[in-house]
Length: 314
Image: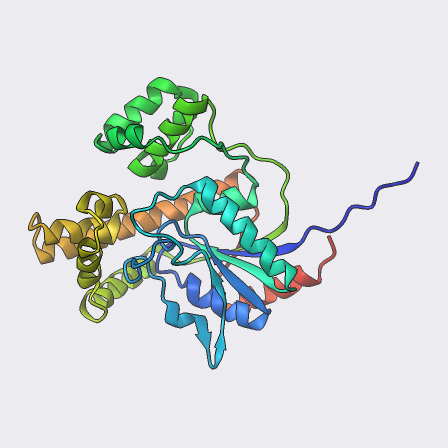
């Protein structure tokens, strides 16, 4: 009997971390060192015109005179629906394109579900968006959406983490999928690639200070409020802006005179910090599920880990 020789799986690097942890800067420096290209794993950076609030930091993709290519940033209108299945499809296409040119794909982001869909190779439902159902669901509160999900699929609902339970956009999509097929998206299959997952380790106090400093800079120096005004003038409704959460939510409230500037800044800073804590919880939960994450605190550590990963035989 002839023994089948298994072909080594292509190697891919993931860099994850909470918001304001420095993922983009680290990813770009490592891409420059290892002939890589960046694939964003951020659920809001796919939208055009949402630059400051989502922290695209496109100027960071240049090191000296070298431009680092990036993918899945600025690809659709804010009024266009975008879901996990579409992200996975486009990310896999980008990965194969980068590999075909002999370069290293480096996936950078903090959207845990996007990262898991790639690394754990989720088999996703093909249920299409139902516009009328979605419009009806989007009028409901998070608590109402949660009750619907509990009623139609309790065994799935009780397994969701707090981030999912409190994210109305995800709850709407889960209800759509379950109502359309009776099934759910998170079915793992064998991994297509060999992943090295680097996690940026940052303590809560340092993270909070960076979040507040970045927020002040975006409001005072980058004029983030004008960005939200421009999106509204371009035809993005306030309900749609609010659905993006965080910066777009609270600045929309401010522009509608529902809250004052100081209240907006205070509430937004606290909301971003809570969001970052939820991201950290998601990553730790992924570890408990068996995923290996190499936690690093510096560029040198990341560089060393990648060198070892690329040298190692499968």
